Amino acid sequence: GEPAAAKLHAEAAVAADPRDAEAHHQLALALLELPVAAEDATQTAEAQASLRKAIQEDPGRIEARFLLGTLMLQADDVVRGERLLEVTDLVRELDTPGFQALDPRTRIRRARTIAEEVPAWSRPLLEVARAQLALGQPAKADETLAEAMQLKPKTLELYKLRYAAAIARNDPKAQKNWLERWTDKRSQDE
Image (tube, rainbow, N blue to C red; front, top):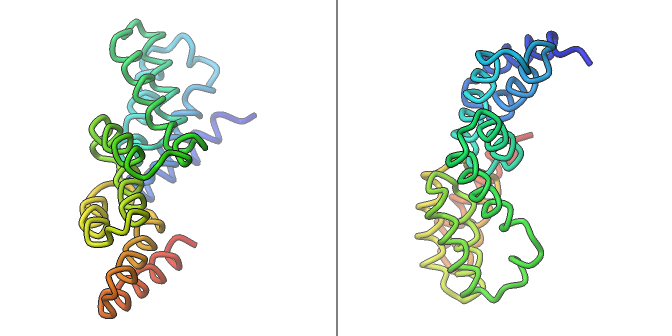
């Protein structure tokens, strides 16, 4: 109920960590809640810029994608707005029970399609690796996860699957390495 204060807090969070997707997302929400936001094109443009930054830092941020697509449609940027909303539906697919119920080979194909649409996002490759492990292909899964580690965000789940792939490959050195890195990441995220 206090958008001006929310904006100040979000700006401070962005200043503290410019790569924090949540801070950028919250700044956009605060900007849109300010009393003049509906009439102020500059404020709406700033909100869109904050949403773009949130998506850049976390390409799977569904709420930011949906809000940005909606704002683009309202600003008569119909083609790009509709495209962003279409890709948002693909991003959302990974969290559906239907996706998880697919056989591993189909999950790999679907996840690779999503990865083509959102190439900076680690999550589709994580799903590919999960399916590769289910198929008994730990070396391929490890290669896929190494590629995913170059993308955003670097989630705890990536580290956990790297550890699982090392176990499946029966590689004690890699197991030790990824267990340590997983533990470090978990303590950083808490």
